[in-house]
Picture 1 (cartoon, rainbow, N blue to C red):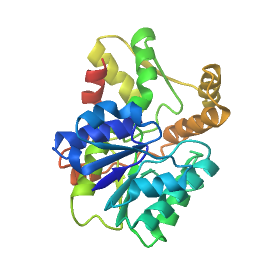
Picture 2: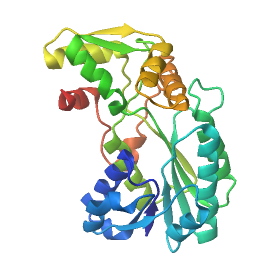
Picture 3: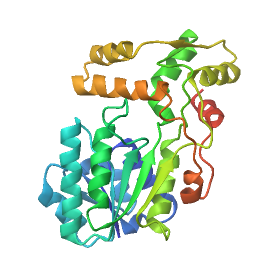
Picture 4: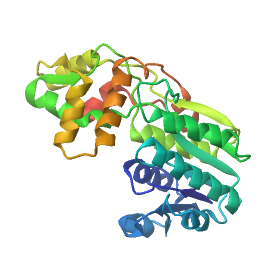
Amino acid sequence: MTVITAASGKLGQTLASAFAAKGLAGSVKLAVRSPEKLAAQQAQGFAVVAADYDDPASLKAAFAGEEVAVIISGVGPNEARIAQHHNAIEAAKAAGVKRIVYTSAVNPVATSRFDWAKAHEATEAELKASGIAYTILRDNSYFSNNDPLFANAKASGVLPFTGIAGKVAYISHEDVADAIVGAVTGTGHENKVYELAGSEAWSAIDLAALLSEITGKDIKALDVPVSAFEEQFRAMGLPEFVATGVGSFYAALGAGEYAATSRDVETLAGRPSTSARAYLARFA
């Protein structure tokens, strides 16, 4: 069987839907802090158990008897994430898990403008030294990260972004979920690193032009500083580490750190990655 951590988040629930679509709900355990959040998935046939990244004993119990652990990266500052992922890796070792599938991020190096890349760098290094077989999936930026910006563009005609000429090889949550299913159920993925990115890359200028075409409304990209994003996040009441962390992510996107395209989604999922036109048409 397979166990998925942090299963109540957007990716976790999308992943559960992907397994269910293949008739595999009965072979998957969903581990989450609050099991009551996944009552619908339990009704589909998934096993649902309580597990917390900050509680190693709960992780070990959740991993017991499982062949593969899908570790969806945690939340929090780098120090907290690194500790949480360490707990999960150690619990997997103690429980006898044979392989870990980890959701990392593009360009997981300390020199990235994206501050939380440091946590992914540390976790990848620990995984490779753990003695457990691993499959690392480096996710590009999700289209849906920009949904509030797309909504603003539809309403105002302005798509704000940092570095509007910077290209990003966006993907959807469904792309990543289907790729994870392929990595879990397929063969030959041990000790491999995959770049889960789109087969094309788009700048904010490109996305504004596509939105204009799809909506019939003139929409222009507007270059705004990272500080404007950070202030918006603070105004929303988000913690400081979130304001600066997400701000740093947009800085990395605008600088072109996420521009590299890939066919790894197609390799793992058996279908092409989602195009910008298809995503924006659904959004509009």
